[in-house]
Length: 293
Ligand SMILES: [Ca+2]
Ligand SMILES: [Ca+2]
Image (cartoon, helix red, strand yellow):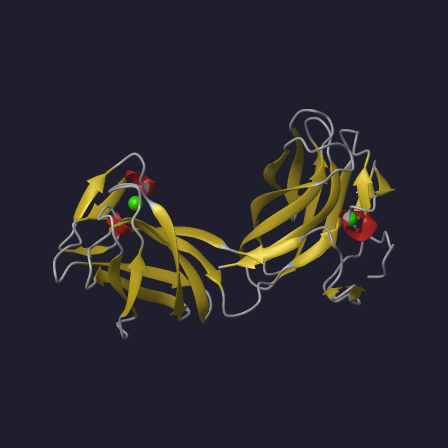
């Protein structure tokens, strides 16, 4: 899409726009990241020679401890949509005061040792990122006691594709369909332009042709400004259906942009997202849509 266009027809098949060393597929107000924020709780996995405990600080109120015997293990069944190398989060606690190791294997393959640094204590959970290669559909991820110490397991989850670039596309608000609002210029705005005076109850910005490769949950990052002094909102409509209400915390002023993220369900193919005035006032710079698994 040509820079400066205010056409409503924003699509990934539009001509690329080059800004410095970056080439954008189309617009610069929406980044697309595909993520399915699924958690697999340890206490719901297959636990061998371990004990389920309760704790208010654990996800789902429970975790698994006592993975301390030579045959102790927790095996999760994880479903992903595509074959890829994923970055996976392991939520764990290690109260031994020293590094512990666990042996991780995927789909009964060769085990590799994963080192877990000590945490503030038992039941004090932190995140550990590991890389796993998964197949489409169900996969078995086994964490077994390793050679040193032990850990408590809360959950695994938040699978991100790491073997390929995240599909991230930015859609500029000023290139969307704009109703009851105007386009302003600012050197600090993405594409140097943004949408302001979204002031009427009917004022909105709509971005069409947001292409999602598969149906799923996507992370939207919205560049906005809110100089009103208090949190404001937009109502979001996704493909004609009511979406989440988007809350905009106060920024440094009008034309002073911040970022918020919101997860939305998108269909495979083209999607249309509309942001309409809710409570108070906000200006819109862009949306980025990111694909995550
Ligand atoms: Ca848990
Ligand atoms: Ca912009």
